[in-house]
Image: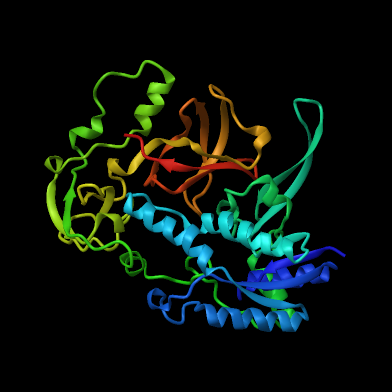
Length: 403
């Protein structure tokens, strides 16, 4: 009998994952990850870890499976929280959920599971896994693991797993990926699981809902600065100058960040730290009196300046091309990776829940460019871009600023 360790989070998805695996004849063990100790920055009653661990325990008891809590808060702080602080300090906007899957659930947690004799680790993610025999260049046959979108289009979470490796996917199971959310709740109700009607958590991976400014202020001190508004017709958006002559120059020019200075706009307000803000952000600026709402179009953490523009069609929000540095390119399907000079038609997304966008990958010596058929709003440095062929997510990378 194959043994599976399920990451029981205290939510309905992982509860049903454990139930389904038990029904399928696996030997199931439930493990709850405790990743956080500091309750001062979490919003009360919005998924406190204690309530979640109790719910996970009750589900395990109902299913008659062994259960224990593992405290990973030290590793979480080191691998996720410290990384987040560093990224925000450098003016990048990290995605802790993607990192949590790569560094915690399918690394630290997976190693604990394997030490318990597990053949697999299962989670409640809405995605699917498939495998295929592929003939390598040397004629040998190898098993390739594929990460596929979840069947429920409104819940597909494959994006959050865009940094997994073949080794991690080989040991992973996603039992609810074939189901719609409504069916998952129905199964939970029929199985009389306490989590059947529980609301989905909306917070950082296994921390809960966090007040982000207060969370960041633990490490990043507030620093008063100015907010400038850049008009839509500013000359910078004309992109005049020497026309690119090569494809590499063209892609570089398209991905290049606009270089704003205070002289290009007017001062419209003050803020308490450019490192707390991100491209595309609308809330928290506290500047009134404009015809259209202001959006952050860029932050300059070095000089502590926020640049904004009016309306969600402001040209400062849009780019057609983004760049990924060489060391931040990741292929789930290593057998499909591009060599320098090669291109590939794909679909891509730059944030969770964004509909897939038509695009082309261009592999250069310096890294990767993703050129979209249509300009994209609020391409954000530090976030992940994922690339897909059909319903399969084949790779991803960290969006890098081109200056």
